[in-house]
Length: 327
Image (tube, rainbow, N blue to C red; front, side, top):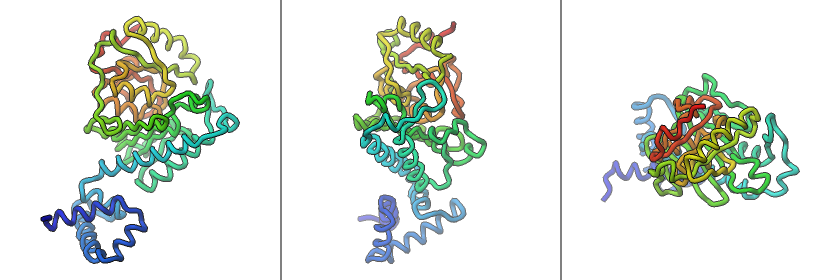
């Protein structure tokens, strides 16, 4: 038999999965008196322990200690809805506009998905700042370092998307006080959802992910060509040539967020790219770290998480002498 405290927690937590209409029906129905009593108690507890007022769902998730889990579930749901928009795409090429940089494209679907995500995630965390590819802001401003900030790539792998060359993914990173807190990468074509919360491990469709313990000599190496930055082409392939000699072979998917997820899964032993935007690696790099990978810039320095950077992601089995290269 449940105690009163357990009953209160169960009722409050049930509110988190309800939309506004369902919640209204509960509060005005037979359970309304009890529910209102528990909500009043929860509001008083929130004011006492946290201070101030909050919307219902914020208050309940904090009081129930469900904030990270709730955030993750709702962001995963938003990523899947965004994936549905991607899968619905037709007549892609005629809608394509070219952005600054070699082969740097955007489609109407990039914009539609970003608009959807901004709306859905704003409803979840109204106080959060947003950094999104189609918004054009690729640096963390001082204001973005306080509280929550979403870093979004609506379609990572737009060139793949246009050519119908799989995969392309939805990438959502959530930062807290300027540091990565949560990451979700969704590949709708294979229905694969990769995600992580800082300090809680990484998961592939609910199953724990761990990086490979194989040495680099027995591993595949994933890489990106930084195609928007033609001045990096020669250096990129100099690195690729060196890594090819140290590994089984090279692979290129065309989406950094997915490549980082593959390293987290142990499919590859290394991934590198000489210049990525923050939205390209915000989610995937955290997922890889939580799976046991070492993620740095190409020279082995810690990632700064505040703007464009080179990225080097090494598995647990890769020896540092094999993957930190000097020219």
